[in-house]
Length: 244
Image 1 (cartoon, rainbow, N blue to C red):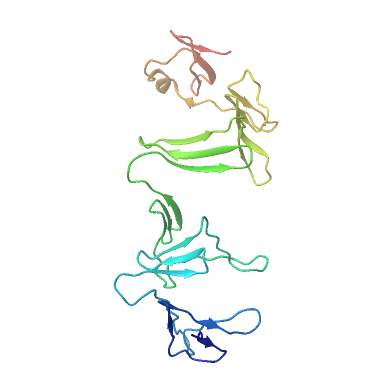
Image 2 (cartoon, rainbow, N blue to C red; image 1 turned 90 degrees about the horizontal axis):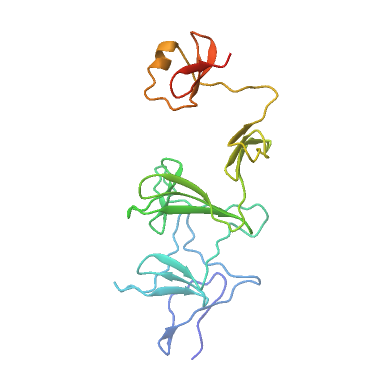
């Protein structure tokens, strides 16, 4: 039985069944064919697997299909989406063309909140939800655990420091091997915090004598600046001692 052929500018009105299959060849122009939903503005092109209530799949080639029952799109092993073939072309995924946007939900956990302009990771099972950032050698992840605590963790076999930098990529905060460097990428190994600056100093908490004496059970070594005495003072376990 010959197969029906749709030539350019031809309107298909019938197709012919052949061994329980319906096949249509599109004889379009060289380089590809185009299927239009209509000739008027805003005409839709609708593909359905069947008019029956129980839907089948819509197969495109052999590795890509649309699950017409569950409203899902699948690829064979993976699914790639491109915004175009040219350099710099964008891929835009929108929930709706309407001014009032809905959310874009990925697998019920990842949500792009269009109304709030935010990206949410939500797990209603109250367990750890993680986001991993990695290159070839290092993996960091941040998470909110079941207790609601925020965690930022280096999970790599070879540990690397955490850097927080400004727009010029100059180190503002550097954490490595239990040492914190402020404006230095090489904090001293014996220093818990290493401050580096030629323009700024360190300000200890400032309070008057009454406020200082109101501190309940101060630990030995606690240091403040007394604005009444105008002195830097440290608690020695019994009394406050001025540094000069």
